Length: 124
Image 1 (cartoon, one colour):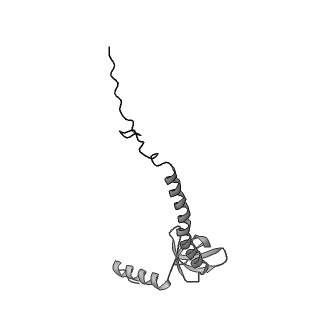
Image 2 (cartoon, rainbow, N blue to C red):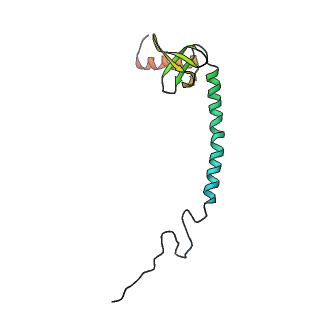
Image 3 (cartoon, rainbow, N blue to C red):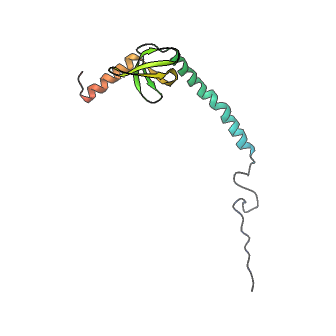
């Protein structure tokens, strides 16, 4: 009985025998790419975070803010580490100051709220 063996190229080799795939150029392009990403990411994200921290530091009474949990409120009082927000009439919540995610201009949020109420047909 005769056995027939076919010599087929493996998936990591091209028909000519040259390697293909992730090892074709070596691992150096991957390492260089990771280093570039690791250097650029802190530079790009650091600027926005620094601006946000400065805005939170300059927090004033009656500012409209959004917390990291998505709660909208008005600053009633604050001290070095905490901020008290009024989220509804006579409903006040106390947060760590670092929980303030974004600060809106008082005129912008009042205008947006009144426009939404007008579209919804709410009279107040």
